Every structure is written in C-alpha cells, then in structure tokens.
Length: 447
View 1 (tube, rainbow, N blue to C red):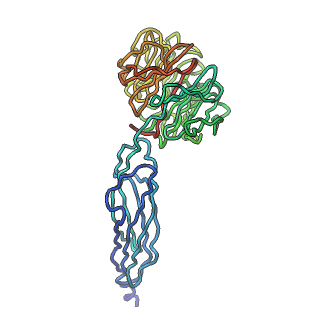
View 2 (cartoon, rainbow, N blue to C red):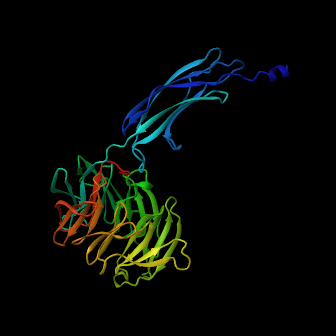
C-alpha cells in the first residue's frame, strides 16, 4: 500500500492567464481610474487533488520598482474540470513620485499560481504622463505694516493682492501641487488655499521641541529628488526639519547643544548643516539623508569681520555639489570630504566688496549682493549681474524665468528675469518689507 500511495503525487498543467483589458498600451494621467480585466484558466489535475489558485496584479516601472499591487484567490479549486475565472479590479492612478520623468513607461503583470506552485502570467504596458506643468502665480511674505501674504499672477494681472497671514515677520513657501502655504515665524504654520485664497487661520502649527527657540531661519521646499511629495524644509535654532503638507515631521537633522543653525542644504546625497558654535566658530556638519546620523564635521574661526561673533553673517552655498561657506568678505570655505588634515580649501567668491546678502538658486548656482549684485553658476563662475539690491530669488519651473525681489527699505518690487537675467516686462510692487517669495506650480517634480 505504501508503494501505491507513493505514486499519488498531484500532476496537473499550470494555469494560463490572458489580459482582456487593456489589450494595448494605455496612456494615463494622475486621477484616472484604469479598469483592469483578465481571465484565468486553472486546469483540473490529471492525478491527485489541488487547492484553489491565487492571483496577483502588479504595476511598476521597467526597472522593477512596484507602484501598486493587489491579489486574491480563484473561486474554487479545480476538481474534475478547469476553473475559469474573470478578474476585474481598478487602479486609481496616483501622482507620479517626485523626480519621475514624463512620460514614464510602466509594466502591467497578472500572475496566477496554482496549488502546486506553478504559475502562468500575462503582461501589458502603460504610459503615465505628468499633467502639463503650469505656474499658478507668485506668493510672497508681506511686511512690515501688514505681515500677511502678497500674491500676483502675471498671466492675468500684475496688480498684487494682499491677504491676512501670520501677523509677524515670517518666511514662507508654497508647496507645489498641495494648495498650501507654509510660513515660519517662531513656529511653522500651514495655510490651506481655497480657490486661490488662503484660510484666515492656519490648519496646523508646529514647534519641534521645548529646546527649539527663536526665529525660524528659513522656509523652503525640500529638494524634489529626495521626497515623495512636495515638503517644506524648515530651519530652526537647533535642527533642520522636513514637514509634509499635513505638518507631520518626515525627517529631522539635529544639532549638538553647543551649535546654533545658520543654514542647511543637500549636497551629494547628504544633508549639510551650517552652524555657529558657542565659541563663535563656524562649523559645517554632514548627516546621512535617510537616517539622520551625524557623519562628520569641520570647524574653523571666521576671519571676515562681518562673520565674527554671535551676530556675524555667513551663508551656505554649493560648488559643484560640494558644500561651502561664504563669509562676509567674500572668502569661500570649500569642504572636501576625506580632505585629511586640512579638509577646507579657501577660495574667493566672485565680485568685490563686502557680502550684504547671498543665497542659493533652486536649480543650482548662487547669488550674492556685493558692490554689485551677481549670479553664479554651479561652479561659481559669474553668470550675470543685477543693478540693485537682491533680497530673494525664486524660480518659475514652468517658464524657466526667475523672480527677483529688489528695491530699498522703503519700496520693493518683484522682477521677472530671463535665464540670462534680463528683465521681462514691468515689475510687481511687493510692499516695503517683503523678504521671501515662492512661485506656485500645479505639481511637484521635474520640469
């Protein structure tokens, strides 16, 4: 009897799968509902018994990254005749991950695995196209008489509009695709937009901890290539934090108790914080971008008179993705990792005279106001100059233009500039104390 039972192993053919819909390449955009339909035939065993087969649908990139999957089981196990099932499901097309190219080729697969572990599959292809990138207007922080929000949509009118806001001097940024402004005073606040109008009160407010004190240093968009959506990058006294549109903390890089944050930014896939120590030295610190682990630091005593002391000025810039600190006399301290005993190289920033203000361009490069205002490429070579003060520069990804905030303490204007930094049209009045601004776009991600 034992010998007879030893020959009772199940023998059966594997299942077969066939896509019914879609049967050709489908072109999709965010928000579409794609109906998926496929048939499965699971043959009855030639000998023995088996269990009901399972199925799985997967949508992902050709490189193997899964975007969506769903699974289930067939209605019954095949006994004397095949099981024929038709499976229907729906994929609600999400926004492409930030950093995704457009169009994105996707692979569609349906796999059925029978009770014996044998599989059958069928495949299809999808093409996901980002919605056309458009600009939705320029927002800025107004002041000093009315610390709210200013707005203008140059495609409609250059006449600015004013809305109530934080009620104190603040930094701000619009989160692309989120209909949300994030402002920063001593706390970060999220102001939802309804039909283009900010709410009269913030939907959320965030202060990381009791040790976080004083004015927020900056509010920017976190770099798209490192986030899954449009997030805000907030510089606090003791840390840099990335917040999502709901005010939830997504990532944090924390300083030591003897350090105060000046600036922060990503370089070569790491987070770099520029801080001032209790001894009034300057220090750049590298952190792991994913787990926030502190990796290494370099410390020096600034020599420029305008960068010395607790109120000294210094700015973090990048030179071909290497972090550098710009001191108030134009001295540039370039930090090359694994630099041995002297990891800092001392260079000169373009221009002459003391540095009054400086910053980084969102698409690479830097700007500074010295004896003349100037723009520099990623390698810090001179790109162009501007006749006047610069308070802030933000870019319009849809048009390729820059928006530059210039003027005096009595009156400031936003100027639209070509990539060559030549002005376009008439300036937009920005109020007397505007210091920061942001072009709103309909979605995050690359151009």
